[in-house]
Length: 310
Image (cartoon, rainbow, N blue to C red; front, side, top):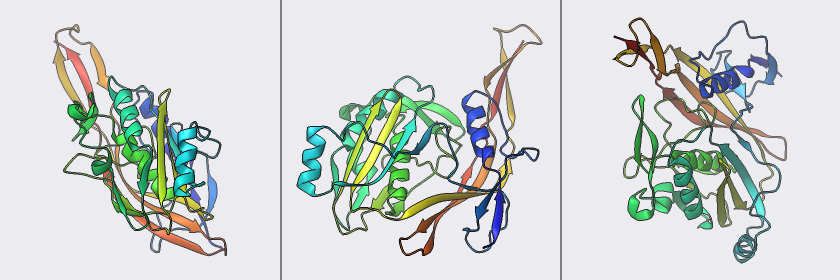
């Protein structure tokens, strides 16, 4: 079988440096971390920047027992719906959550837990959890707006959308609607995030199995856990991505009277932009390999903001 070379540590390096407050580029030609991957790419892909099942410090599938799986309420729900088999599970950590973010995520997870998606039905995150308003109990939290991070009611629920999206993909469900953020996020690899905005952007997927799906979610100690229960999934699913293009960040300078003339202070470290193509490879029990395209996402550079003394 033909082989493709890929640098697996680069995405990890990007996310780790960004989370630590550094401006960083994705591609480092001198990086020695090389592995060999099976050629599972869609036809026509030749770019060597290919990644499969990238290790990430803040998010990954869950293999072991989950917090709620011994709870009576959860067991009763599984028994009533005959959804005892875990289809997929995913967890997302919140690096340095901003004020209000952790609360909004916990509330959204509580609303989502116990949701049933019947065979053939489509789940809409906005219809299930939203509107993300004060009337629903949501508070102020951080959200992306263009190339800025702003505060808005319900800010932070995109972590729910991202975790829901990853769990749905790993369960091999049909994705109906999904939008990426305008800039890279620190908590999942490029191409694995999802954003929502009530009435504008939604996350939707279809239960394409023959059994109901029970969704459960819980946030604890800055980690969001989510799982789907229904038909047993015997397929092996790998997430792949190809970096198509890189775009350097830029610097915005702002005058500050808090600094002496000639002094500088970095307010936002910034991050490069990129274009990424994603797809999953499904390995069936009979050895058949199937590829499903997840589309192309473009992330704008996050500008580096520096204050200068005047």
